[in-house]
Length: 153
Image (cartoon, rainbow, N blue to C red; front, side):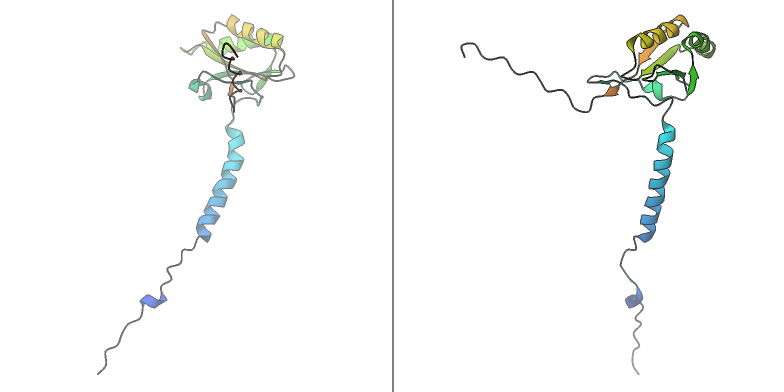
C-alpha cells in the first residue's frame, strides 16, 4: 500500500497581480483631476508673490467673504461680478448676521492700484473690522545682496 501525496500547493501562484490596483489608481487620478479646479473658491487671479506671507487659514472656509479683483479691474464678490458702488451694500448685508466681520481681498498682481484702493475703501465703508489681503508664497527666495568688502581691501 502506497502513501498518496496531495499536491495542492503547486497550483497556487505567488505572483502579485497589480492590474486591479492600477485601474483603481487611474480612476482616482481622473477624479482628482476633474474635482481639483472646482475646489478653488472665487475667481481665479494671479496674486502677488511675497517672501513672508501671513497665514490666513480662515480664507479657505466656506463662509469666508472673498472679494476678487481681476487684471482688467473687474470686481467679484465670491463668484458674482459686482460694481464697486454695489459692493458696500452687498458686504453690509452679508456681515449683518456674522459676529466675525472679516473680508479677504484677492487682487491680481497686474491690477491697477487705484482700483484695489477703491475696493478696500468700499469694503471698509461696510463696517469691516478686519481686512485680509491674500498673496502667494514666492517659490524661491531672492538672492542675498553681496557681502560688503572687508576694510583695507
